[in-house]
Image 1: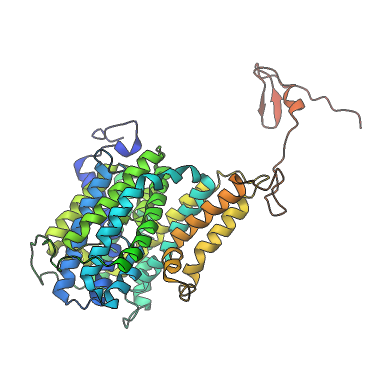
Image 2 (image 1 turned 180 degrees about the horizontal axis):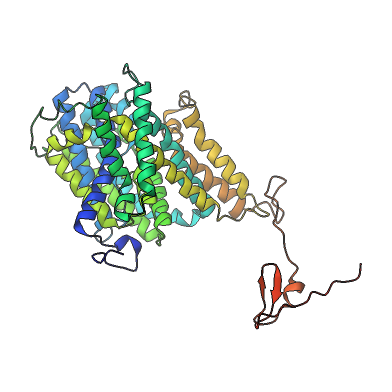
Length: 486
């Protein structure tokens, strides 16, 4: 351990040297930057905003994401999980907000619905957190695995170029750059120097950007376009309006956000090996909802924990929440200095894609590790895992599968993460809590492992042990086996 590192009881309370904290924090920002600017880009375009107005929207999302991250990681009484979770604008509400914008309500109706729905979410957060007892490893393993699997298409899109209608989307050049970045991540991860291997993602992005510059794929021309310093203006897009239909639609989004944030809190707790109870989940959800309710004042939207940063915690092993606090501070600075945001935005999307493959895959791997702890003997756990992951993958494999379903259904089940959570919780309740399938489970239950009759164990004496298939006593002498006559 570095002599400047402070050892603590909870892994998330570890304090690293200032330089390392800032570097790891910047790595978190780079990991989630593409995700946090995508929703304001989409909603701003649908609302008919011009380039400068969309820039203001992006700045507001960066600023509020930073403040929300600081609240979530540092925490105050009743607010904040004090876990290494990065907060940002949730993708879960993009479709719903787009529908509100295009239905005639405009951006003020979106902002008003976010405020109202988030305040309701703030009230129900403590009750929602009580579902922690319905999240045994068979449920959490499914959800964590699904988080990683559902994020892999995002990495694929980044690797292909990010913009699906661009002429070079999916080009050999883009895929080559993503592959080179992936190779750099793997090589740096193998370096037996902690300072390098833990920063493998950040260093790979820097190296990937340098490679892209030699390939002529980096454009820094727009870095100086626009103001260098700007403070987010309250109600820059007009006073919010409150429409009942919009609020009801957004409330469904908030419930999905609560589900996803709960899953992320449990996931990161499992990854770093710290205790996560209903009280801690409730504090995290309150921080989520308070940030979401305040965000529209500055022109931002619903806030939630970013799953891709959970993957970064898993792959780097850097568990300190103060590292993520530093990342939140960087986001606030980016929100005040749009020019820095434009520099970060210049990182080619294929570079993010190459790094994202490892990041998101590591989340799925963490979920598989959790599922390996589940007891599958004589119960329906194997079916719970199989059905839940299958249901979760449907909207990933076929994104239009629920297009003909009601809007509320589409909002909930279009997200693979919330689909997995709902399916795993319901199936676990049905099979493991409300009657179950009996001692023998079902014909599809996993086969039991080999067992040893208890009578044989009773023949052991104090100090006996099994070494290389032989039974020895406390003095190391082999105990002869009594073979019955055949």
